[in-house]
Length: 336
Image (cartoon, helix red, strand yellow):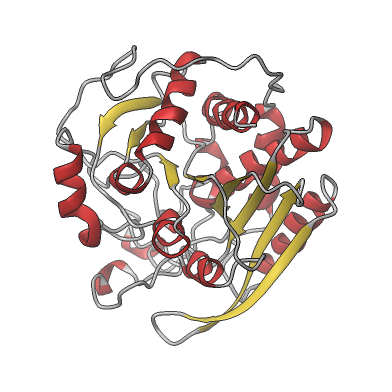
């Protein structure tokens, strides 16, 4: 198994049997037998502003690594909460004291922003906002105890979702939407301890899934964004998503292809990983997919600077942000 995103042992056998085609390597520019054309709804969809999302990412990174229990972490949490309050009055900072794999008690904050809270037809959008405390995949051993700037692995998904929040404040999506930004996702066991502690990752989403901000919370479907800002990113049809929510994944990929983002959203099926969506699916039973820059055939599996000190703003592409942001925005507005 790998680091933060582990090979999904608990679902991999079922996933492999279900998917069958995990070894497919070709890029396809048209729909496949898994992606049947669907009727396009005639609804207004606002234009996602990649410059705005980029600025939101840049602001997060400027705080420094958002490692739990640090001043930068607290300052960024306050900024995220206040930013979302500009776009909706329904913002909750869910505080929790969470025990990490090494016994460290983490002062965690999941930040939830809701739109149309009384609408029972809801969609869940989520990402994690914390930074990895250790750059344990850095090629230079001298850097492996340093924190990760986390421009892509953390801040990119948050930046996209804050921009979507801004759009929804100006253009009613016509259904309920909850943006949940998870804390303590990246405090999992370091590379040298891999496999010693089960469920050491995604502590914030584990907590929220067991203690949602609304009792009995449910949504029609969920979309998790993780590492969605790197240049030349490739988002594959990841196995945990396809196991729990294949119809949602196909719907999202169909929208991306219709919008012309084929080179980002590949129809290649890849193995299952554990990420925040795993616990949402398993505990809350909300069919949730992961849009993540992942390909099991790469050396690391994830983007080149994953869990290194070079996960900084130099790797963030507005073109990638536009592809992800416009796709997700379109899915939300067409879901009403």
